[in-house]
Image (cartoon, rainbow, N blue to C red; front, side, top):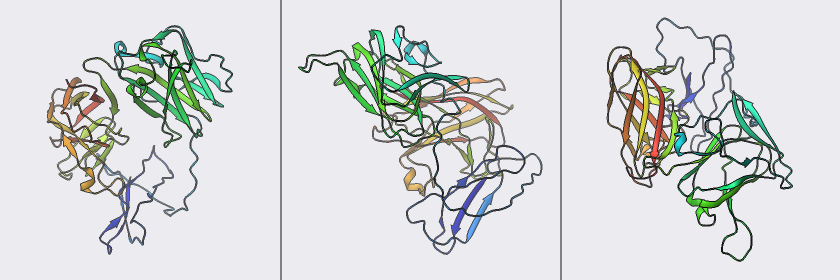
Length: 386
C-alpha cells in the first residue's frame, strides 16, 4: 500500500511516497511513518492512497479501511535480539578464511572465549536455524588462535552484527610485538557503526585499515570492545583472487509506476508508466571503481524478456530527493532472458569514477506484458581491474 500527503497550493509540496505492507488477510494495523524532512513543515490538504501498489490482480480485489488517523510520534525501542538470520554470504569457500559462520569451515585451533578477565558472557545461539555468537554484558572479549593466521593474501573482513543497546563497538586485529619499543602486541581497532540498531548490519572492512600497524601475516588474536549485548555472525576474511569483490544480494521487491512483482516474478504491463520498474528496498551503498558484475538465475513464462539494471546516487523522492539527487547514475546493457527453465546469467558493470557512490538499485524490464522470474540476484563490486 502506498500513501502520500500533498499541498496543491504550495507547489505540490509532498512528503514523498510512504509505504506499508500487509502480511495476510483480515484486519491489520498499518503504520506510515512520515519523515522529518527540511522544508516539509506546513499544512497538507490532499491524501493519495494506492491500494495494492505494484500488484496486478487477476480478479477484482476489495480493501477495507477504518480508523484512519494521525498519531503522536512515540519513542521506538530497538529490538534487543534478532529473530532472523543475516543474509547468507555468497563468496566461494576457497577464497575465505572463516572465524565464525555456518557457511564456511572455521580455522583450526580457534578459542572463541579465552580467559582475559572479561565480564562478557559468550554463548552460541540458534536463530532461524542459523548459529550466531552472542556477547552479553560486553566490556571486552578476545578470540585466540593456536597458530597465527596469515591474512596477507586477503583484502577484506566481513562482520555481521546486531545490537539493540550498545553505545560503542570496536573490532581489533592483533599481531605479535613488532620492532617498536613498547614491548607489546600490535593492535588496531575499527569502530563499527551503531546507527541502525535493532537489525542486522554488515561491515565490510578493507584490511589496509589495519596493515599500517598490524602484521597481517601473523594475526594471532582478535578483540572486541563495547557495551551492551551484541550478536555476531559471518566473521571471515576474503578477497585476493583475480575476480574477487564485495557481493550483495538484491531482491528488487519495490515495484513502482504500475510495474508488478509477485514473489520473484516480475512483469511490466503495457498499462504501466513508461518509467515503471523495481527498486531494491534495502540497498547497500556501492561504488564500482574497478567495475563489477550482476549474476542471477532467470526463467520466462514462454516469451523472451529483455531487462537491464540501473544504479543511482540516491533514490528519487525517497527522502525528499529530486531527479538531480539521483545523479550520477548509469545503466547496464540490456540482457535477454530466454526459455522456461532457470538459467544463470551475468551482466557486466562497467567501471565508474572512484568517487561515485550508488545507494539506489533499480531493475527495468524492456519487454512488456511478459513475466520473468529472477532469483539469486547478486551484485559484485570488483576489488581490482579485470
